[in-house]
Length: 159
Image 1 (cartoon, rainbow, N blue to C red):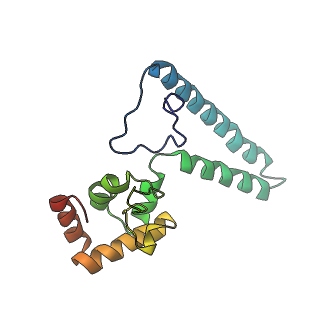
Image 2: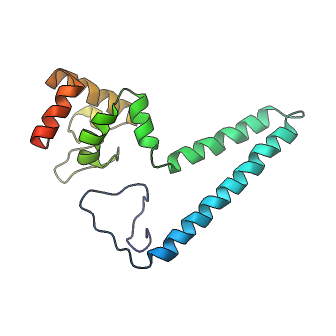
Image 3: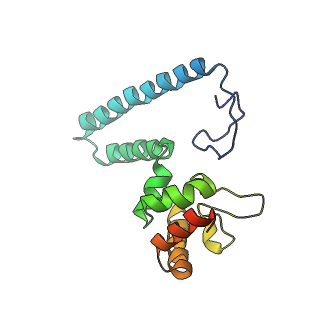
C-alpha cells in the first residue's frame, strides 16, 4: 500500500488523507512475511550471544542492544510510548496530539505550526521528550492544567 500511494513513512497517516487500497491483499501478505523473517532472525541473534557469552560477553551485549533499538522505531507506538514516558497522558495524546499532528513529531501544517502539539513555539521542534514537556508546560501555564487544556480542545477544536 505504501508503494501504491507513494508513502515514504509507513508509520504515519494524516487525518483526511485518502489512501488507494487496490491490490492491498498482495501488499498485506508481504509485511506478514517480512515480519516473520525478523522474528526468525531475532531468535538466532539472541541465541548466538548465549553461545558466545563465555568468550565475549561485551560483543553480544552490543549486538543485542541494536537489535532492540532497531525494533523500537518500527513499532507504531514508539512515539506514543515516548510521549507517555515524558509526562504526557493518554487523554492528552488522543484529544490533542492525534487530532493536531496525527502523532507525528515532525508534522508541519500549511500555516507553519509544528510538532506533536502543532505550535509555533520553540518546543514544537526537537525530540518527542522536549515536545511532550513543552506541551505539558504550555497546558499548565495557559489553561491551569492538562485536564483543562483537554477540556478546552474538546470544546473548541483547537488549543
